[in-house]
Image (cartoon, rainbow, N blue to C red; front, side, top):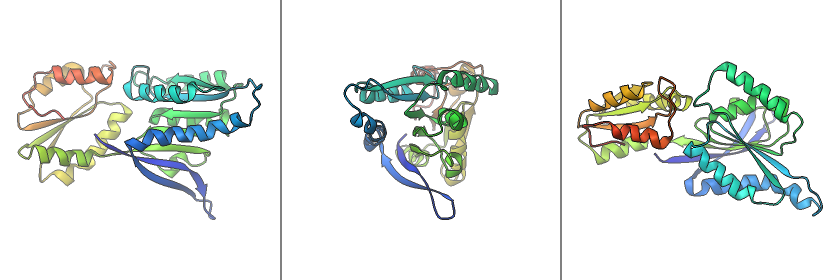
Length: 284
């Protein structure tokens, strides 16, 4: 699936006090260049003004929504460490919320208390969050622990001014889903298919992608029928996939956690789909 990116260059207010946001759309080749450019601009000024004898480091707190081994956020962490971690005077602190495995309200209450203990006396110069859960978590504790700390977000599927108003300084990049154009491409390659079966789990990412896909159903109902496999176990997924007809396409949205709470890497999730004896030759 291809994505466009929306770069949020910070919030301002007009004369009426209404939040305004400058938005620019970018494709992937420019995405990470811009992302790290923002990091560099925010981190380096105080370093360049510091004396060579100043041993104080700039601390960059990176908060991931998920866990080590999750390919998307692993690549983000690797890029941050390569670009910032190698620089003199910058300390990169990595945190993982592990929300694919743990998502109860009581868990987030405990996380908040843990962060209070860890960071109430620690100066953080920049916060970087990846994906929605990390963004929402940091916003929930920011005024208490990081009130004036610049915050950069990435990997966000949907953002609006109401969600982030009052949390300046804030910068970030939003993913713009292109499911509709992907379906158009599928229909151009496989004009004779009768249905598309979408696979989604019950994670926040899966629910969001599923909601977006369902909104497209009316747009494409004249051309193809939508079927959904939602929130099932691994065994149920494999059994269901066996019955997919040959004139259908399988569209993977998200299957990182099954209904029994078992968590998979993206690679293992794809292997599960391919291990089923599928009649359809058209996985998407």
